[in-house]
Image (cartoon, rainbow, N blue to C red; front, side, top):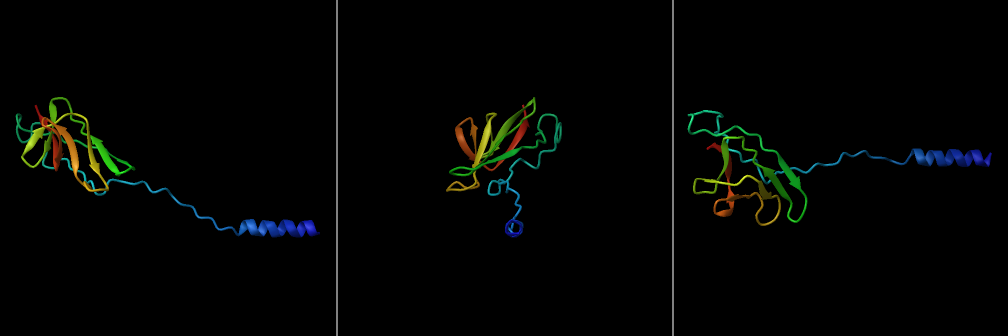
Length: 128
């Protein structure tokens, strides 16, 4: 009888333990906003010699010190990456672009251009 009472008592305690199901929060790039040139109209638009491709750029968040967002500008064949550094578009290199989500350079994108690593505000894949 005592054993039965203890069993029910323990069972009641276990049944009353509150549980909470949580879903992991996937951090995203919020300070580093997407910056692909929205004026690009695609192949041969507005002309056959002056157009930029419509490209989807996948951004990746990486936690660290500082937290960063990175991306690769996937320019299709026949185009080259260009970055607006504040002095017009400059030819850039294929490769990673980075932006700090936290810290003193928060929200500023950086890429490698002809002159070296430079901050930029806009990017595109321009026809060669």
